[in-house]
Length: 266
Image (cartoon, rainbow, N blue to C red; front, side, top):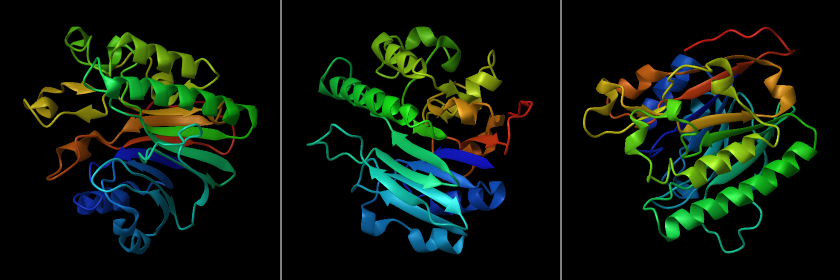
């Protein structure tokens, strides 16, 4: 089974790119972020025509998350993280698919630092910590996938010295990600590519993609039973080079029916 996460940076404006990639890569499950569309504008019919059922949690102009499943309808289990009673930002959606819980998230950017946006990011991260621990306690297969807006280590960012005070690389944010993983999650890409610079995002500015001046901010965190079935992980880097594409590239994992020897794929 192939599972992908993709920050589309506007699902309607880049629908042609998304459909082209879905046809080419044929993932079984896809987590989408940054839809930038209210619920009524989500392109459900176009995705259905492409063979994908969907659930979504939209927001006008900003944020928005969705989960797609090939030839089936995802079973919605949650919209929004617990603890955000006055939080109107659409950043988390969850589904049950093929006996797994799939959580799709779009963690806040947090810039500029310092400021209220950075404070909101850390608060949202703490809510994620609490809920992720609850999911692990269920002892069911769980995947938390999406745009975490975090570069966990120096290996995940070109020229890390330039990013020390950016909200994606601040020590508080990296510490929050580390503490999340230490609950018992496996960082899938880093598990299979422990010493490689694997990027998932390249800015539109300063010719970043051509220079490979990238960041790894799109992550899969796997519960132990899913991690034991992890067989491959990679980034569809070429999609970032398509016309009118997102500044992210689709990131994916493959899991087998049973625990198996792993193969590394870029």
